[in-house]
Length: 368
Image (cartoon, rainbow, N blue to C red; front, top):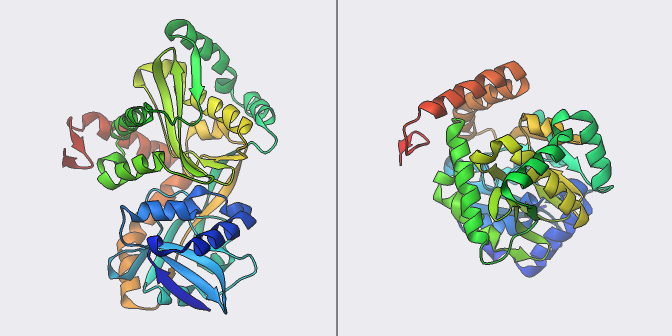
C-alpha cells in the first residue's frame, strides 16, 4: 500500500472519476458529504483539508478525506457540519488504519458520523447512534401511508395546509431553486436558522464566515449529479419555509431546514418535509437522510434508521493522547445526553432558557 497526500484541488480528473466510481459501487457511500466535489468545495474555505489517495500496486483503491488540524490532529472534512464521514474505498481492499494515519502525517483521526461498511475502521468505533431516514425507494405513497398511520400530526397536515392557503394564498413548492432570486431566498432561510439557533440556545453556525461562504458557493455548484439543493415552500407570494442541503447519487441529506417563526401554527416544517419527500421521489431521489440527533419530527417522519459511529484512530504518540484529553470529556457528556431522553429534555430546556436571556446581538458567547 502507498498513501499519497494531496490538496483536493490537486486531484486529477482521473482520480476524481475513480473516486466517484468507487462511491457508486457501495450504497452506504451514496451521500454527497463523501463526494469529491464536497471535499473540494470545503477546501476553498478550510485550507487544511487534504485527501489521502490509497494505492495498491498501480491501482487506486481508496480515498481518505480529512482536515489536518494543529498537533497532527485529524478531523473529518467540514468538522461539525458533515453528517456522513469515512473512507471511499474498494469493497475488497483493506489496509492498516494506523499506518494510514501515520502516512498522512497525523497523530490521530477522530470521527463522529462514520457511515456503515467501513471495515478498515471497524476496530476503532467506540459508539453508534441512529440516523433517521425517509426511504423513497418505492416512491412517495408507501412512505406517506406509513408515517400517516403512525403520527396524528402528519394526519393533520392537510387541514393545516388548507388553513394556510385560506389565510395566505395557494401553496407552491420548488424542489431546487436556481433562478435570480435563489440567493436572496437562501439568505432568508439562513437568517431564520440563525434565529432558531439563538432562540434555542445553540451555537449559531452562520456566525462563522466560512460556513456562510461555503453554503452560498454550494448553491451555485452543479457538477454532474452533485449540487446544492435549495427547496422553498411558498403560500401565495410569501416564503413560508425552506431547506438548503446537498444532492448526489439519489440521496438528499437534510442539512439546514428553517421556517418563518410567524407561521409556526401551520406546522411549516412538517409541510416542508412532506413537500420535499413528494417532489424528491418524483425526481428520482431514493433517500432523505435526516441526520443523527433526537427530534420529534424525525421520529414522526422516518421510515427507519441507519447507524453512524463515533471513534478515533490513534497512534501511540503524545500528541494523540493530548487530543484525547482535550475532547473526550465533551464527547462523553454529549453521548450521555443523546442516549437518555430525560437528560436530552433537560438539556434542551436549559439551552432554550439561555437563548431567551441572551442579549440582542450576542452570538456564540461573543457580542456581535
